Amino acid sequence: MNEHLPARRPDTALAPAYDPATLDLQAPAPAAVELAAERGPVVWVPDAYGRMVPMPKHLAPPPMPMPAPRDLTPLPLLDPIAQRFLAAGLGGGALAGGTGYGIGEVINAAAGFGSGAAMWIALAVLAWRAPARALTDGRRGSTVNIRKAVIKRSTFNG
Image (cartoon, rainbow, N blue to C red; front, side):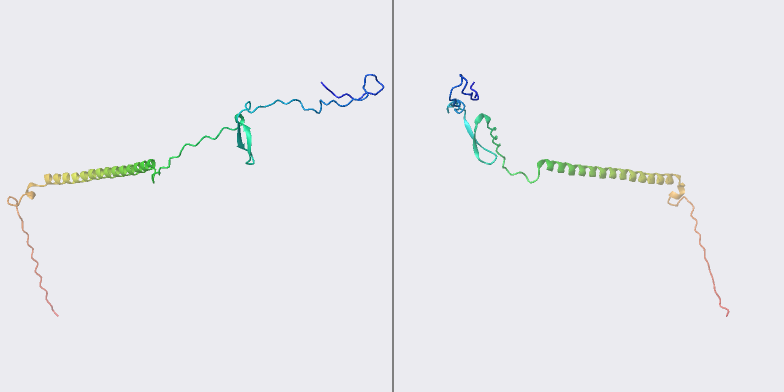
């Protein structure tokens, strides 16, 4: 190791008369030679300021993957799934409305049948309980004709 020693006084026998600084301190160390074939591939990438700078390929960021091609066919005006939901809602509402209307009609018919049957039963009981002569045409029964005549004469005595 070459190190710089301070100059000794000339009265010492070991020190030379002139001690220049060694040239090893100013000379660069021999550099390793890098051949182009030994170096890996270099790619140019943009830096933060938009300038293209060289960079070893193994240190470069991975390339951006190519996006898949887009399907550019026109879409339907209404989404098919939304159409199904709309149809199911309308159909379900119509089914519920029709079912409610039908059940109401059945209940009304049952109520009408009940009141109509009660009326026919009442008429049958009345007919069964009525006397037989009231139901006949009058030949066997007795007929009573009542005539009332009112005669009034007014006189003026004045």
